[in-house]
Image (cartoon, rainbow, N blue to C red; front, side, top):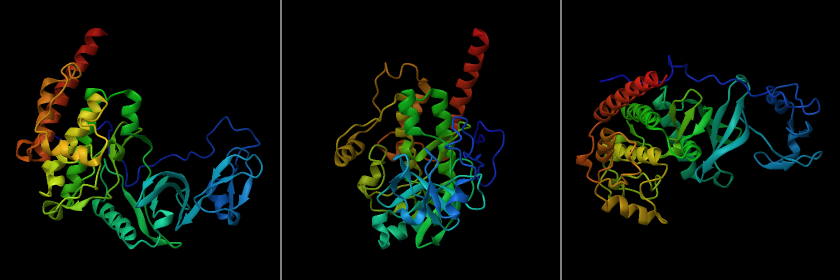
Length: 363
C-alpha cells in the first residue's frame, strides 16, 4: 500500500500554529492602532471598534450581535467569553450549531473555531446532545494531518461548546468557484488526502457521511483538511441505519441512504466520486430544485455519463476510476479505501512524472 502523499515535509503538532493576526497591518493610522491584544481589552470589560479605535463597555452590548460604534457609526461584532475562549467573529453554522473564530486567554497567538448552540436552541435537548456527540466524535478521532483537531469541549459560562483548531485557508467550494474547476493533479491530491482522512475516521470506528466541498478547507500549505462531524455515525450503526434523506447534501448522497439499505466504505467512495466530478468540472453531476428530485436521480441513475468535450483533458484511466466510484450499484464500486487509494496514487504518480518531464522539455 503506497503511503499517503502530502505537500508538507513533516506532520505538524497537535494543533497547527497560526501566527497572530493582531498588530500586523501597516495601513492602520495612529488613530486606529490598538496597542494591546484584543483579549486584554475584553478581559478589562471592553469591546473595540476596529475602524476608529473606540472602546465600548461590554456590559452595554449584546454578546454575539452586531452593534453600531458610537463614534464612527460603523458596524462591529460584540464578543462573548466561553470558558477560556473569546468568540469574536462568526464564521459559519446551521440549525444545530453556530461557529465563531476565537482567541484563547492563554494561547493568544493561536486562533480557534468554537462551536456553540444557536441562540434559539439553548434549551433544545436534541441540539445539546448533537453538539456534545460531535465533540465526543472529534475527541475519538484524536490527531491526524487531514482533519481538524479538537482542542477542548464542555460547558462553561452557561454555554455548551467545543473548540477546534482554526484552519487558515479557503473552503473547497470557494476555491472551485474562484478557479472554475480544480486542476487534475490538484484534484487527485486533494481526494487522496480526503481519502486518508476518511480512512482514519473509519479506523476510529466511524463513517463520516457528509463529504462535500463545504466541509473541506484547503489550507495555506495546499493540503485538504476535513472538518464538521455533525452526522458522523458509528460504522456498525451506519451499516444497519434505515436512512434519512435530510442528513447530508443531496448532491453527494449515496443512493443506499435514500433506500435505507445501510452504508459502509463503498458509500463514502460514491460521495467521493461526486466530489471529484465537481472538482474536475466545476459543477455537480446532478442538478435539481428539490431534495426529492435529486434523491431520485441518485437512486435511478446507474452509471456515469459525461460530455466528452468537457472531459477531453481528463486522464482516461482517471475517468474509468471515476465511473466505478459513481456507479449506482455498491458492488460495482471500489470496495475499500485501500483499493481506491492504490488506483488514485498510481494515476497521480504517472501524471506528475509526465508533468515534470514536459516542464523540462519546455524549459
